[in-house]
Image (cartoon, rainbow, N blue to C red; front, side, top):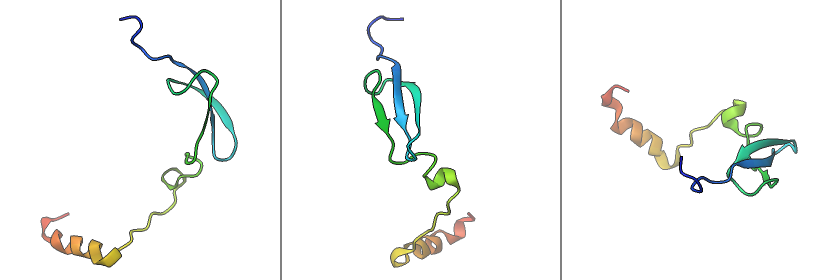
Length: 73
């Protein structure tokens, strides 16, 4: 392995949206820096099971469904 070409791998603190902090290793920032998350698994609907709603603005979804209706999806 070549020397001097790899980024520094160090510990940082990650602050979740609820205020809890955990340590992880990363190449982001410097040793001991803190990363504050705006969206994390505690708040994002993809991880919390929130329902996504499909908005049909100007009939675009209906137009798409009609255009590709015969393809057998």
